[in-house]
Image 1 (cartoon, helix red, strand yellow):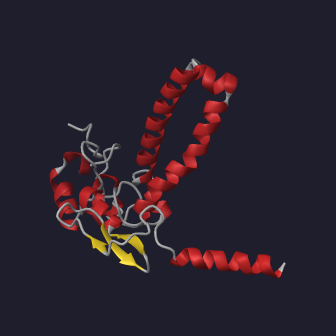
Image 2 (cartoon, rainbow, N blue to C red):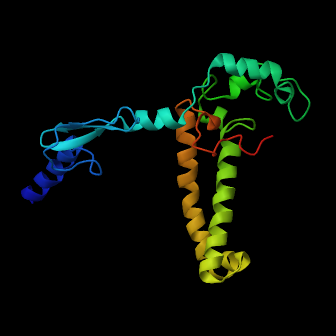
Image 3 (spheres, one colour):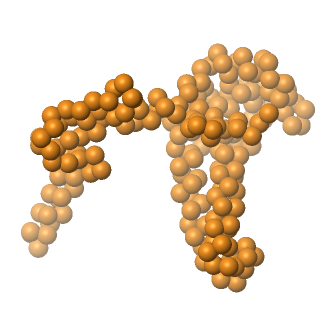
Amino acid sequence: MAATLLASTAIPAGLRSAPLGSCSSRSGVSSLSFTSLGAPRYTKRGGSIRCEGIRETVDKATKKEITKEEILQNQDTNQSEKQSVFGAVPKSGSSYPRPEVDRRPETGDRSLGSIFAFDGAAPETINGRLAMVGILWAAIAEKMSGLTVFDQLYTQGTGLVYYVALVPLIAYASIVPMLNGESTDARSFGPFTARALCP
């Protein structure tokens, strides 16, 4: 009993100090750097190699910093930012419509209420991502099983179960960057941008 208790407390403590599993290997290499390529730097610590700078490398390759000045300039020049779908002019401090500088996670309120508001960043982002995943999932499942989308949803039921299991995961992955002050259009990779389909 005491040995089990000791093992259960010692293992998590050891995991906290362990190097990254995918980037660790026992090797005689003391240091390796690919700074010219922008790749992560590997350094030797205690007999193992540890990756450093992965987040910084991904940020440098995919993230665009959006400043308050750029948001205010877009508000002044973009016609769609000068009135809401109901024709009202956005005003600071109003619940709806809000100006872009108040809606964006970078400069506005980052609370869940603000992000999930009618004009917030979350609803359109999450609904769009779930729709894209749902269409792709249905097409792949139809090809693999031979069942139509209707059959997948209403006769077998397994396609719907797996899709419903993905919904909270995709929603969570979409919300976390917004709570950290990052808009959807702040990230891009190659042709995949938030405004790729816009003229």
